[in-house]
Length: 222
Ligand SMILES: NC(=O)c1ccc[n+]([C@@H]2O[C@H](COP(=O)([O-])OP(=O)(O)OC[C@H]3O[C@@H](n4cnc5c(N)ncnc54)[C@H](OP(=O)(O)O)[C@@H]3O)[C@@H](O)[C@H]2O)c1
Image (cartoon, rainbow, N blue to C red; front, top):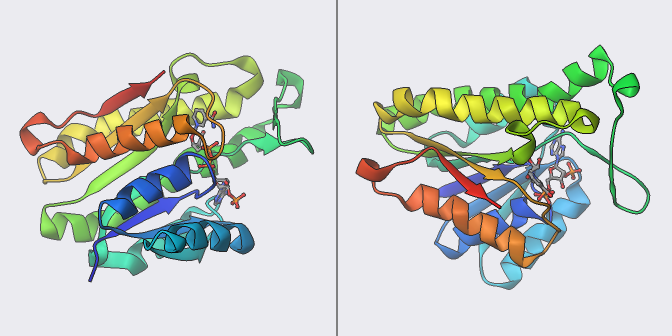
């Protein structure tokens, strides 16, 4: 049985590159996101390289659903990667900004479900098995907006600040239990299927591969 790497928020950029990096290191990778057709295509790209992949349809705006998916994998889960974030694209595939007058309490709350709450739900759900083994890695995709917030990306800025806070706050207590939590703060634009996405994936692998005495909580990709 291969050890399992799960990425929640699997798309063609950082999600795919990181899954591929772990698959090449011998993991079975489970790819979770909303669109089953796109997911299947990502899995087929990995399988075409002889790598082991499966797909899970999941909407990360629902923390309870996220918790169930993670709990179902149970003891096989060695690495949890929370990569989902709420942002919107126009018909050209460009990210849509949201000026303050369009940022409502509702849009902020709904974005935070995906950006933060479901990350915590995933962590809660993986901890019983990781604690029982005194082993496991939790990786969170952060963003430069979490450190340098931007008005037109307020929900994402709050979300990435939350992701960073979760990683930094939980690092020491989880380390005491043999579990490594870390975040890569991505502080530049990353295109799908790019060399930069692969470099972020290597940052995640580098965090995971650290020896326990040298564990760190954050790497910054600029
Ligand atoms: N790209 C950048 O320039 C950049 C810069 C800094 C930080 N980041 C962070 O890096 C992470 C990955 O970004 P990326 O652009 O490279 O994307 P990606 O890994 O290519 O794909 C992320 C995937 O997340 C999925 N997703 C979004 N909302 C979801 C939801 N509610 N439930 C389940 N899946 C959901 C989407 O797939 P479906 O639509 O099929 O669900 C999307 O394809 C994000 O956390 C982002 O904030 C990106």
